[in-house]
Image (cartoon, rainbow, N blue to C red):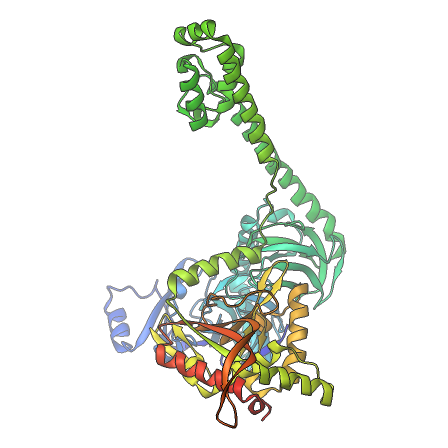
Length: 638
C-alpha cells in the first residue's frame, strides 16, 4: 500500500502558564471570573483529572482541525490529562486527512515512548478512508506518552493520540501520571473490538493481539464477501503479505497486511457473504506461542454461542406444537379447497407458522375424512365418483406444482450483481435521462482499420477507434465532459477525459477506465483495453482502474443489436450505446453531379445523457462532433 506524507498535522499546544486546577478556582470565585474575563479570547476546555478537573485555555486558531472542525476533547473516552505542575507539553490529535474523513486507524507507531523527535520525523502511520499516510512532526521534542495504541480502529478526528514534551526529564512525570489512563484506553479498545465481533471473545484471557476488521476497499463499499483466505491459521505474516481476497461491490481485491505476526484465528470463514465493513474477520498475534491460547479462548466462547440456535430451534418446535390446533390464518389455496369440499374449518388443524392453515393440512383432512360437513358427506354418498375425480384432480395438481418447483434453481447473487442492480435502479429513478440518436458511416473507419493492419501490422478493433473518436469529441465539446454535483446543485466540468468501457464478466458488468484517452494513440488504447478487460474478467482490477471516469461506452456491436439505450453510470452524465454495423442503400451524389444508389455501412449511436448537464444543444453538438470524427477518420491520427 502506497504511503503519502502528511505535512500539516494538527497539534494543540498547552501553555503551562495558563494551567489552573478546578479545585483551586471555582466559577463563583472572583479569581476565576477575572481569569476567564482576562482570557476571553481563549477557548476554555475542561478535562477530567483524577480527583478534580483542569481548565486549559487554548487559542481558537490552534484548536481547529485541518478541515476547520472544532474539537471537543471533553468527550474523549479513556484519556486522562495531567496536573498543572507538568511542564509545557503538546497534545497530538487525530487529524482530518481528507474532506470525508471523520475517523482513522493507527496502523503503526514509528516512534516509541521516550524517543527523541526531530522536525520532519514520522511519528506514526494513519490509515484513512483513502490511503495510509505518514504523520510527521513539526516540533522537536520527545514522545512522552502514546494515548492510542497501535492497531486502534475508528479513532475520531480530534481525539488525542499522543503527548510530547520538550525536556526528556518530563517523560517520567508524564508516564507516572497516566499509566492507569493508558491501561484503560488499551483495555477499552480491546474490549470494543471483541464486542464488535460475531464471536464473543474475552480479551482479558487473550495475549497481545490485533483484531483485523473488514476494510472499506472502495468509497461505496459497506459490506463484502470473503472470497479466499490466502493465509491459514498459524501461518507467519510479513508486511505486504496478502491475507485474503475480498469481493467488494466493484471487484475482488487483495487484503494486505501492514504488520508482522501470525494469523491466530479466522473469525469470518472463506465464503462468508455480506460481511459488514468494520466487522472483525481475523485475529493476529506477535508471538507464535500465543496462537493456541487465542484459539482456545475464541473456540470456547463460540461453542457457547453455537448452543443458542439449538435452544431457539427447540423453542420454535414447541411453539409449532402449541399452535398446531387453532387456525388464525388460511392460505389462499386452502380456502379454495375448503370451499370446494365444504369442510368445517373449526375441525382442521393448522401446521403453519402463527396458526396458518396450509394447503397440505386441508389435503390431509380430505384424505382422512376429517372436517367434512354433513352437506359434503351427503354429496359424497350421492356422487362418490365425482368426489373421487375431484380428489384425484387435487392430487394431480399437487404433484404438478411439486414438479414445477423442482424445475428451477435459485442461484445466489454475487456482491457485484447486487450493487449493479441497486445502482441501475437508482440511476433510472434519480437521473433524468435524455436520449439522442444518430447514424454514422462506418466505411472510413473500416478502411483505416484495414490500412493499419496491412501497412503497419497494427491490429485494432472497431471499439478501440470508437473510444478515440468519443474522446476527441468530448475534448471539442467540453460541456459534455461534466457531471452533476448533488451537494452544490451545479454542473462540474472535468479536467481530464477518462472513458469507462463496459466489460461483461461472469460476476457482472465492470467498467475499467482508459484515462486521458484523448491524448493516447489508437494502438495504445487497444493495448490498454485488452489488459483491462483481462483483469476485469479475472476480477483483478485495482480500485484506481475502475473508480472514476467521466464518460462511458457500451458496445453491443458484436451481437445482432442494431440500437439500444444504455443506463447512465452515476456520477457520470453520459453513456454512448454502440450498435452493430449494417449495410444500407443510400443515394449518393457522385463527382459528375448524378445521384446514384450506393451500399454503405452504417452504425447507430445512442447517447443517454443526464438532462441536468446536457440540454439539446450540448447533446446535438457532441453527436455532430462525433459524426465528423467518423466521416473524417484520419483526424484521429493527428
